[in-house]
Length: 167
Image 1 (tube, rainbow, N blue to C red):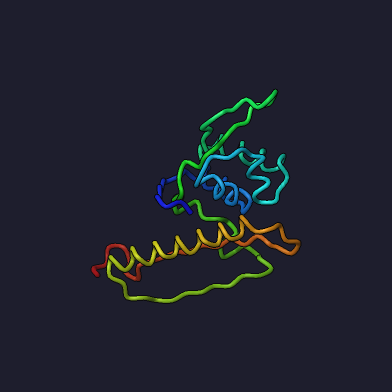
Image 2: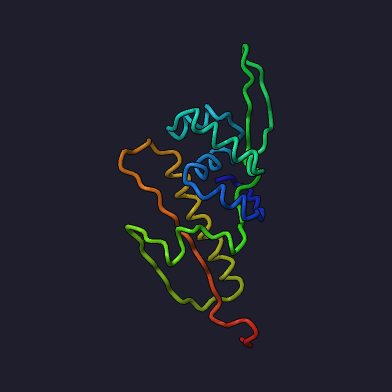
């Protein structure tokens, strides 16, 4: 992803806009440099109309911004850029697919307990974000494959000390 990380907090409504692998792919294409919906569509192997629709939703939701308009013949090309490289959603905006009562055909859970200093916790979180961003970029730039399936991935780090308990 981009060398300079810009992280913003988003609303529940904005988090819902990112509840789609296609929209995450679109955002990933708009981090490093502004592009038109047609350029993004070409880069990710989707139809221009479909990408345009989703880019408009992302723009209306404040997750991408219009940065330039160029007149090319009789057409106005609109260039968009992501407003951030990372988006932090409210705790209550978790993808519903990740809830315990979602009846998925396939899921897996990996859990582990680690003893971490505050610095290690920060380092772990940063490495996890970098790892997930690598996979977003890897899947966004690949050729459209016939046998793909959308998965929701959530990483939750929870202190084992309850609120109010002394640690």
